[in-house]
Structures are given as structure tokens and as C-alpha cells.
Amino acid sequence: MQQRTPIEEQIDLPFVESLRISFQSLKIRFGRSIITTAGITLGIAFLVSVWTNNEIGVALQESGRQSTINTFEETTEQGISTKDIWLIVMSLIVCVVGIANSMLMAVTERFREIGTMKCLGALDGFVVRLFLLESGFQGFSGALIGALIGTLGAVLLGLKDYGLDLFFYFPLLPAQPENGPMQLGVIIVILLGCILGMILAVIGSSFPAWRAAKLPPAEAMRTEV
Amino acid sequence: MADIVVKTEDVVKEYRMGSNILRALDGINIEIERGEYISLMGPSGSGKSTLFNMIGALDRPTEGQVYIDGQNMSQLSQRQIAAFRCHRVGYIFQSYNLLHVRSAHGNVTLPMIFAGISERDRNERAEKLLDMVGLGDRMYHLPDELSGGQRQRVAIARALANDPSIILADEPTANLDTITGREIIDLIKRLNNEQGVTVISATHDLKMLDVSDRIVDIRDGLVERIRKRDEIDIEVGEVGGEGE
Ligand SMILES: Nc1ncnc2c1ncn2[C@@H]1O[C@H](COP(=O)(O)OP(=O)(O)OP(=O)(O)O)[C@@H](O)[C@H]1O
Ligand SMILES: [Mg+2]
Image (cartoon, rainbow over all chains, first blue to last red; front, side):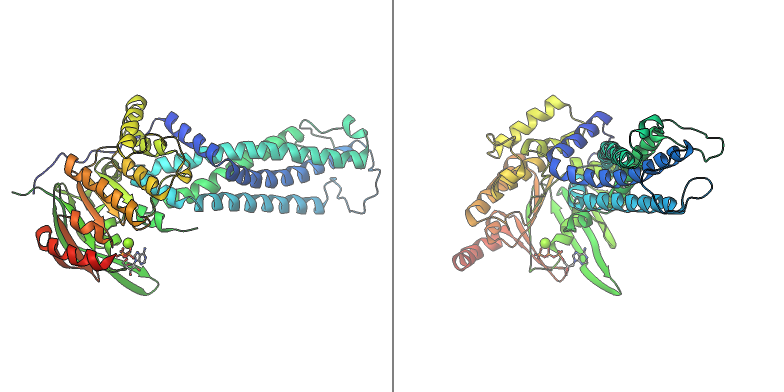
């Protein structure tokens, strides 16, 4: 058998090319991208609103103000109720599951595309990088919008409960009251919400993308959604 | 000595489904010469696509070896396999498998992006290839905006992007009407004649018979027989008469 030129090693794509391909992909499937991003927005909005609401409640209690509406909830000595902890934990779970689910769906319907790109010479690492970039961008923008919506919701609720006093005692920055628990402040909550949303989106997307990229292309292309 | 471009040695492929093992390929031995036009024929489920996947390095055989250009495919690294798919083979599928987020032009440039070709060169080549397959006026349309025949033409242009030595086509005409199918076959045959690409095509399409140099009949994961062009010329008349 005749020996031809040996098969070379596939090169890595320049980062700019990956960036261009991922943005083009987001742009063309804009409608679908929006739905996935909305999943992230919702999760983070829910989490941030519950959390900020709690921060506001604690801050106004610290200030000695009482809610104009009587609530029957039992508050602990530190001012944070078990119900609030329960709410925050629940919203965190809803947020994690919601985002993971929406990213997983978005990747699963693209298995065929992943297989096809591998037929054309894509390295596994390129496929993962593509999904990392796309989901990082979606995660960040979705979470930021979600955090802002959540904060707005909590502020409106706070206005209803405390009236304009809310703005005098608004817990914008971290604070350490003498006899209370450490307060993160709304800015930190927003920031944490954005980071969490982005991390969840990136993991939720890159992990299934990595699994799909490792499949032989024949198998990836067989999957019908 | 003949220049063998593809050689399979006792290729076996088993699919495991629960406790069942399905032997889709049961020891395939074939040799294909450079520049040949080969049709793989056989009933549905006989293993044509499975063999297609083995030759194209889209899946790994359970046993046996595949040699392309004298290279044992099982000894290649990940990066070499990616480069092999990128440079040596052009794939054409029954369902086109175009990336629907990229225009016709964008689909044709993608393999060249992976190959590291400069933007200017790849745009130029994509335009040339799309012109050649008759889509000069549809370059920037998305696949969803094209007909089946036009999509398959884009797939052919894309398959040729990095000047492969082998075109692998899995039932390229199965989703097309007779006339469009005929045009696609003629196009592939033209590439085979003019550029000397080796064509390996799985097919049910009898129109493929008269352009093939050899026909490999596959049945139950085995090569049943191999017919040469001159042996089939007579049969085509008969088959063509009753077939359509
Ligand atoms: N990924 C898979 N998992 C399990 N079984 C498979 C898989 N791929 C193929 N098979 C089985 O292997 C056998 C050969 O399938 P293959 O797709 O190669 O047939 P084919 O000749 O291409 O048929 P067709 O003409 O219908 O395309 C079939 O029995 C099929 O069910
Ligand atoms: Mg098949």
C-alpha cells in the first residue's frame, strides 16, 4: 500500500474566531437564545427578590421601624426568621434547577450540530469553548437583568410595607450592626446573583456540551429531539 | 501497483442495547482505489451507514482495522482524527446536516476556518465552490431558505472546501425527487471525473448504478458481492426500465 503524506495534527482556532462563531450563533437563533436567557433571568430574579426583600426587612427592623403591615411571622433574636431562610433556600433550589434545565434543553437540541461540526474538523475543545462563550454571555446578561428585576420587585414590596422610610434605611452597602447579623447589602446581593447565574449557566451548558463533544460524531448526529 | 486509498480489514461493529448485542458489521474486507466511484448497496439495515461511519472516522469499529492512505485509523490521536475529517474527507448526508445558523457561504467556510485558512482565501474559495454547484446567487441564504436540492448542493460545496481526497456520501439523493437526484449524482460524478476525488456512496438509488465503477452489495453486515462497471452495464437497462 502506498504511503501518502502522514496525517497532520488539527490546529486550535484563534480565540477571535470562536468568539465570532458563538456570537453569530446567538444572533441567528435570537428567539431561542432569548427563551434560554429568560430561564436564567427568572431564576435569578426570584432568588434576588427574596434575598433583597429579606435584607430590607432586616435593615428596617434594625432601624427600629416596624412594618406598617402587621405580620405574624415569628422573628428570631437576630431578626432573620426561619421562614425567610426557608424561602431563600427554596428560591436558590428553584433557581439552580431552572437554569440547569434550560441550559440542558438548549444543548440537547444541538447535539446534531455538535456532531456536524466535528465532521468538519472541530476539536472537542472547540465545541466546549463555543458553548462556554455562548452560555457565559447568556448567563451574565440574563442574570444581570434578573437581578435588577428582582431588586425592583423587592423595593416595590418594601415600599408597600414600610413606605418611604425604606429609602432612609435602604441596605445598599454591607453593614455590621452591633446586635444583629452581618448584612450583605443589596449591591452585593445583585453581584452574587449575577455571578451565580453565570456560573450555573456555564456549568449547565458546558457539561452536557462536553459530553456530546466526546461522543463519536455518528452518535451525536443520531440524536433526534 | 494500484493506489489503495481505503482498506478495511475484518471490520466488525457491534451495538450494545441493554443485554442484546447487534452485529451491524460482521467482518468487512474491501479495498478501494484512488479515483474510484464506489456505491454501497443493500437493503435497509444491512449496515451501509455503519460502514460509512467506520470509513469516515465518525465512529470506531468494535474489531478490525480501517486504513486510509495507508494510515491505520485506530492509531491516530484526537487531533489527527479531527485533521483527517477536516482535510481528507468530505461528508454528504441524506439529511444535508447543514448548520442552520450559518448561511450557505458560512457553511462552506466553516471547514476552512477549522483548517486555519485566512479569511480572504476562504471567502474566495467558498464563492468559487458555490458558483460551481450553481448557487452563485444564493450564497448568503440560510439553509432554511433553500430547497432540498439546493441544500444538498451547499453540502457538496462544503464537502469540497478543503480539497479532500475522499467524498463519502450516505444516500445523498434519498430526500430528493428523481430529477434533482439525477443532478446531484451528475455533480458528484463530475467531481470524480474532473478532480479525481474518490467517491464512496451508500445508496438505494438505481440511478447511481451507471456512474459507479464498482458496486459493493452489503447484506447483513457482510460484503455479498462486488460488481464491476462492465458487469452492470447490461443490468442497468433492465433495472432502469422497471424501476421508475
Ligand atoms: N447507534 C446504533 N445503535 C444501535 N443499533 C444501531 C445503531 N446504528 C445502527 N444500528 C443498527 O445496525 C444495523 C445497520 O444499520 P445501518 O444504519 O448501518 O443500516 P443501513 O444499511 O444504512 O440502512 P438504511 O438503508 O435504512 O439507511 C441496523 O440493524 C440498525 O438498527
Ligand atoms: Mg443508512
